[in-house]
Amino acid sequence: MTSLSVLHDSTPTLRQRVTPQEWEVRVKLAAAYRLAAQLRWTDHIYTHFSARVPGDQEHFLINAFGLLFDEITASNLVKVDIDGELIDDPLGLGINHAGYVIHSAIHRARPDLKAVLHTHTRDGAAVSAQRNGLLPLSQHALLYYSRVAYHGYEGIALDLDEQARLVSNLGDSNILILRNHGLLTGGVSVEHAFRELHGLERACNIQIAAQAGGNADLLLAPQAAIDKVHQQSASAASGDNPKIQLHWDALIRQLEREGQDYAT
Image 1: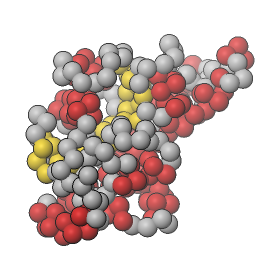
Image 2 (image 1 turned 135 degrees about the horizontal axis):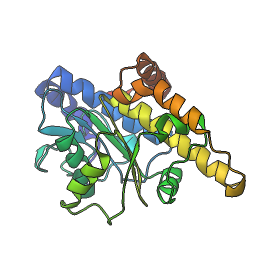
Image 3 (image 1 turned 45 degrees about the vertical axis):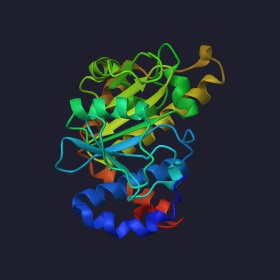
């Protein structure tokens, strides 16, 4: 297996080879992976976060297959084109094909979404397996309830013909629950996509905890409240909300208490 020690030797070369804008996105995407590890959203070496290369509709960044989320750095992210060709693979590990199928489909169809984050967390997968999906049980859930899209499970995402159905089901939303599978959010930036995922994961945590007391006693929010929160949170879907940056900055302070090697 390729030693991770080569990262430190290759970092200056890679940083010089890419634009400052790409390097900035690499650092943010690596931070998102590390934060997911902190928050225990990982599924070993599986699931993926991706980000479009700035100013480039054909290329996006994704994790090298085989690395744990807490091993991701700005310099070991893989650059791949929309057709699956590896453009820059610093460790020679390649990528997970299932991750390519899902992420390339969305990057190709939705140029407005600069980042796409996908998880297989326990509570996210549990909600995805429920007939009614995300329920209006909490304030967290109401931020998403009216704009969640759903995609039915077709098996491990290895077939390219599933891409059209996935994109069709996503529509113009940026929140997708993949049935019997997990959660997915997109954003106009890494920060935006992460804020969306952070709240959606929390909503699923709350739903599973509430259901532990029995479905008969669940108190759903009234429709008037659902409609009101939908209007109040409209800016969240577009990413046009200064609170998104405040949220991200606080997460980075939390992450950097453990160090800054993600940015290498």
